[in-house]
Length: 364
Image (cartoon, rainbow, N blue to C red):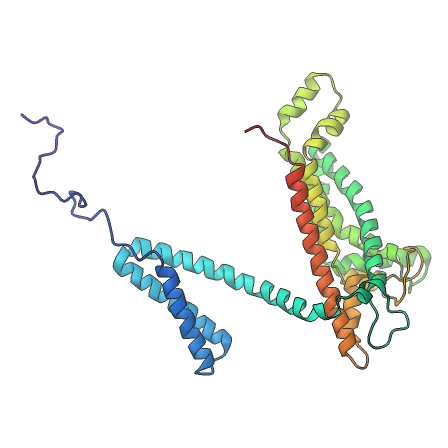
């Protein structure tokens, strides 16, 4: 006699069909179905662009629409609505990613193609003193960028780190809330406002409305850089486990020494990464340096004496005032822009390298 919980054996039940009659399995598209549809859609777009004389953007958009519709319809008939919706969403997300990537690719390709023409020894070893047409270089702008950015880093890093330490380790009450609020406000401040602040400060101090010097540019960049350092350092300090602090306190170590010997070394990798990214954030700023450091055609290694050239301002002036003929100046502008992109990319790679090298080692 069968048990009450047993299922009667009908003898003809399909293994792929549940008792409700809904199939448990569906068909599947070929392994390379997405690539096949993509190639066909790309050929359609190329045909419209080449043979029908369509605009390349319109042909690309139509090809993307054809790819999405064909793949969704094919998947719905073969795999069912659930898998078709999954493919549709995957296609839309991938398309959005590629759409966002297009401007970046366009900028990189344009700058590289136009900037390589002047990437020679003269470009890196000569200044613009006495140069009116072809020739010249950005040696004076490179040194100015390094000096001003180095001074901004020397100002911002100690201030930013000490502020973050206060907020995480000591800050309580209204003062800490006020500092946090102003750091948030400074994070979104327009760069030109930072430049005008530094200009107004030095114009009042020296009683000279037309004053320009490298130190003014460093102050302006430090205004932009400090909140980034504060935020990155604060987040890294919050990630340090409280157990490390408590263990140090249990051994009788004072708080300041615990911060110096335990907390900061643990968070060093993240702090160094944040500082490097903050430098990359400000090294390409143009607006604040236009009104503070200005531009010059020769070398100036003294940030407290007269104008100082920087790479962003150099590229700007080469573009807006190219002279006659304009081609040599435009080539120098594109080459300076390419050099800035390379510097920012190297700084980001250094940040990743620092994060990997100095991250706390864990036992596997």
